[in-house]
Image: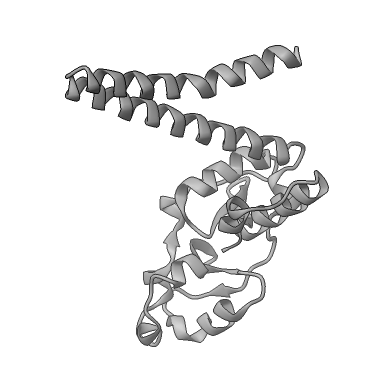
Length: 205
């Protein structure tokens, strides 16, 4: 079984290079447009295989972990009308990149972390309000506490946001942040004897 899996993996990785090679041959034979199309298709297939392998590896590393196991259950709460300078220094200087919840009338309106803060020039902190800098929850998918962490991390990664709201029975109960995903990935890679690389570092910002 392991031998067959290895053979399939070898075929998957070899096929794109065969397509690229065929493209160069076709180009040398005088069909530059067709050759270039094959070369680009080969590199696109290779990139897709790499992305799929990274997703599979992430899923294996996070297997058995749920969102509730790692989510941030309590975050600082700010009003949408306060200016960024009232809380940004603490958020920006924190050893562990944090997140604040923007709340009005008991409703979670948005999430604001270092990623969102980085889009606001420091000179504008005294004039930009939290509501302007946050990512609105209406534009973010929500998670359930029992969701497996692997697929949840994929959804978070696709948004580019600092975190995603975790909701139970319509009520927010926490936030899944990029930092906590990066932390558990780091821990599991170290436990498996693997070296954490840039793929983990990008989660911890």
